[in-house]
Every structure is written in C-alpha cells, then in structure tokens.
Length: 246
Ligand SMILES: [Ca+2]
Image (cartoon, rainbow, N blue to C red):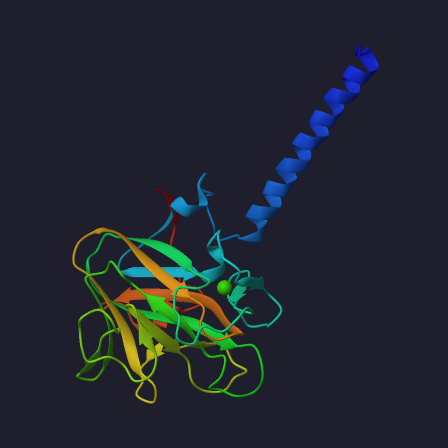
C-alpha cells in the first residue's frame, strides 16, 4: 500500500499517543507506592538497605506479590496498602504464595523481627491470624522467650516450636482481638516466642514469607538490632528502608 502524507501523519500521531499512554501508566505505578524512591529495571533485583541497625519495609512495596491481593479497604494500615492472602490455606505446606524480600545488612549482629498484621475476616482472634516466615541464609533464625529458644523444624536444630513448622519455616501468628492491626510476630502455639535473626557478616540476605491462613493481612515489617527499641522500630514515623538495585 502506498502511504500518503495523511496516513504518515496518522502513524506518527498514533506513535505519540501510544508513547504518552505508556508513560502515564508508569506514572501510575510509581504513584502507587510513594515510599519507593527508585524502580529497578529488574523488579527482582530490589534490595532493602539496613541503616543504623534498622530495616523497616512496607509489605506492599514488593513488585512481585505473587497472588497476594494488594488492598487498601481495611482502614488503619500504614503506607499505601497491605497484602492479604485470599487463595487456598496452606496450614502444613510453606512456600506457596512466596514473597521474597532481599535485605542488605551492613551492621552484622542480632536482629529482632516483627510484623504488623491483621485478621480481615470474622471476629475470632485465633483464625486467619498467621503466615509463614523463613530466613534460610541467615546465620541463625530462632524464637526466644526468656531463656527458652526454639528452632524451625527440618534444620537439624532442636527444640522445635509447638504446632506447625516445616523446612526451616516458622508459623508466625498474632493474638488478641481480630479487628485491630497489631505489631506482633510470635511462634510456638500457646507459648509465644519472639523472633530473632542473626547475621554474622555484612551481605545481602533473603527473607521469605509464604501463605498459611486465608485473610491474614500483612502491613509492614521491621528488623532491629539491640540498640533500638521496639517502639522506635515500629513507630509510624520511622523512616522506611531505602531500596537499591542489585
Ligand atoms: Ca503497608
């Protein structure tokens, strides 16, 4: 077909419209997450940077949320959204609906882990209240309550927590009323142990979360060293960790 000046102009116009349509799409994506200072070319290469012994991350800032629903309908969350699991339950099968957060540690040592979560279905405080957590490449990953320490199952370490644990994963639950967001990460049923992670050397480590109960919503998490209080680590105004690209 012979192109006339008119069809040429139409072609150019279409290309320009397409260009602006695509760039406004991108704009929406970055508006979606105001805490994300940069967008890595490969979303899998995003790394959260520990600073002065603190890592603070909005769960929704991850690019690949792997069938978790990014929602903002249950009020009281921090950041722009939360992630909630609405697919099948995986009560004894960790690794489904995998969320991977890479964390660059510059100050090695002992860190406590805690997340802010909520039940988004029903009124029971003991259902829809847990998800799986694993730090497979950290030097140590354990639950602690006073002098009592528990290790995840299938790691060759003991004792293991009461209730579910498998392949190095802890079941992490919250207790208390269903209708409240709460900073709590406990493992071992009816014997709540706090969660600790040790990093012996500077480096980039991998934190994994996977689906267990339906309607468990994850808002934000913090990893903090012994020189930081839980109040400071979980304060709404605490600066979020910067994201760098691998
Ligand atoms: Ca959030």
